Image (cartoon, rainbow, N blue to C red):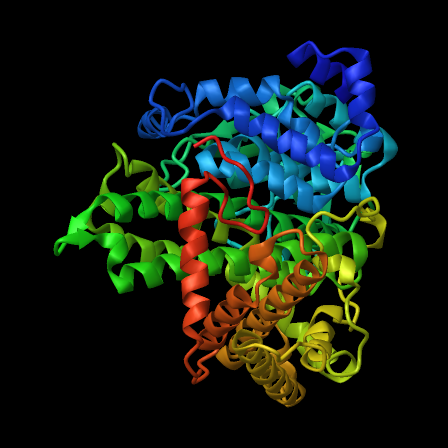
Length: 596
């Protein structure tokens, strides 16, 4: 079934309206999709809404996903957003997929992860390396609202995939026998198919594993079982369980890509999922900021509102800046998939490492303003506690923080020799929020390239940034200090010992990866501001005040001693926090209208 048919069945759309949709531009399509999703989700603060925060919290307390939410997403054929357009779906850009899913994560991380993101993470493996037949079958399954799970995890080995024991043994007459267990698999009990990271060779090393695609309907039910569901602290509605196979036969056509290339396939898929998922989760922190702004405006303390207390104002402004920083890094990482596919490995890892870390820290700071109410699991502020419990889950799993740093570390020395201070800057299109992009080049994703256009953009910006106002001067000084930081990282990366360039590196290497990730975020916010200033489409993003404040925060994260900012910077950011709250607009780069 192609998405034209599915969407029309759900909404009664005519063939003419579908043709009109197909001939609109990329930005018009995603803006319409986001607006449609937000309208259907409704006002989350209206308790009469079946998808209000109150109803979502009730489902969470029961340990289930919202049934109403899943029916609504079925009706919208959300799975089509994970299927490439060439296969009948809506997927054409990774950054626009992030914008769509952010609306779901703004309401409920469990629903975003449990309904869709697991399916997205699994299907990327097939779009990247699968055969035409595998792609066609998976597309049909998803467009019929089926689910697919990805099974990397084995509790005994965590993120150390090359030690995984789950086997796909050669079978007499061809094909494989699946044998062993996978744990903590989302939707293992509800999936119509599984993507399985499997050992196909008993020898040690990265060439011993492959990826298989197995559809439940084709398996002998007597040869496998779904393991009991895990009780979780966060994402309580997600169905986290496992799979246990006992020499379950699958045909040779189940192999995805080449035998022995499972690690490479997984790492290429990670370049897309690591870039995308953190940006989706940004919606949850947006909701938390909005919740605390509402509290601060309505709560009196010391004969004035909490919002009038300078510390509270600063905390709320800082959280807003953190969202803009994270969205800028997410934007460049997702657009790099299209524009710089050979450089995406390091950008994706930096995004998956830094964004959840910053968002969790922002939520902790916001909880201090909310006080004891941040612990309540029901009522007006219950959604805050739910998001606080759910968000850390996205830092774990098969692409945890340490695994992301371990992806960056081996590339630092090569980048220091070949890229920093000598490479070409990234194209301007990398930083443009709404510009069209070419198709996703699944076949051009590279594990490493030795190029880094994003850092080169930071270096180039130093000579091009204006200095005509106090705010612009603050930006220029920060950019200079960031460039000096990159020079230090370059020197330290070149001096790394061989062991410190591997996943077994010392804490020094991991600290280098952390600092480098912060610099990529700095390059991203500078690039976003420059393009916004050129276009003039968004007065706030074109103002250097927010950029100066964002760079100031990033410098403090690096441990720099920073001079005070012009007072106008903090005032401008605080003003925007209040404006977006009262106008019901999102706290990200897109300033999207919200239902409530």
